[in-house]
Image (cartoon, rainbow over all chains, first blue to last red; front, side, top):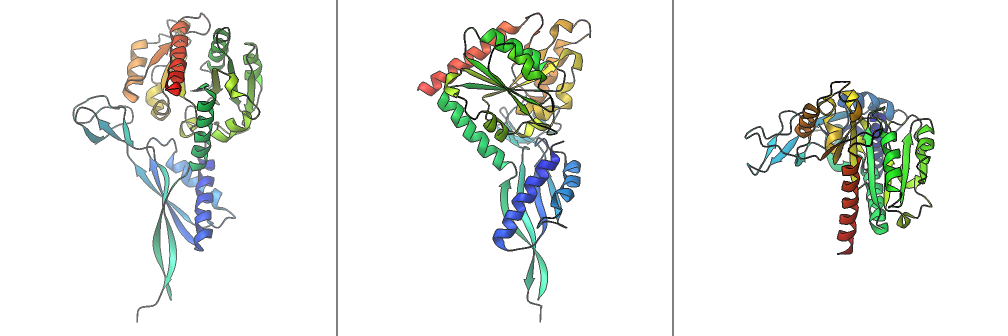
Length: 120
Length: 227
């Protein structure tokens, strides 16, 4: 269970950005690969805990799950993997070990509130 | 004025801090010419017995040392010390994995250029260690025959973070009706092309091939560094 330390890293990273930009963060958008080794549900419950008494208190974590894409040497093309239990090209069945995506653990965006003039 | 939500793009790797330290470690290992091997497995798969045997057998010909991660005890370090190789314990407390910074701290004061092989034994866990790069050259994932053949299918992520699989306790294979073929196929299903060794730290079966593999990798590393 390392999701709490991951959540704390996310909060730390986002709080730094918030401070640097002088903004209040409503939500943190995260890309989470199926092979990142991090469980979404566990991360979400840890996130709230990690936010307590920080600039991020009350913010949401929005997780965008990234499926695994492998590169098939026979098709010479990236292909989505149908199961992480079987690293084979879904088209031609060739075993594939080159991972194109699916290891992501990345904060991609911060959602902030911005004050805009009221429409006239 | 009314508030309106807006997205600011940031793109930051959450584990950047660990990756930065891991990269610095890798540079340091390269400069020292030491080949670094880490071990991951579930608790009880025989990591410590395997490492004790590895250190003992390599020691006559190579300069070896080990770092060992453990939640609470120093039992593993004491066992490994029997090999006469320098061994240092990293007690992780409640933390379920090693991070690059812990390795960095543990290595403080070590003359890495006096070593040929450095082994890092991770905490027994097939989940959490997969996310953390420790700067190693080679990551071994161990499964024992008593755990069953389907471990790779249950933990594809750790197999994908590792380079070589080691099937341990093969002296017990017949007793537990372990199928080498099924285990091998499962490993290849989650990590096509992964080299697999089967051995027994108790009887010594299969250790020769694995030790030769390590020696070859060390030679290759030094040759590529010399170019």
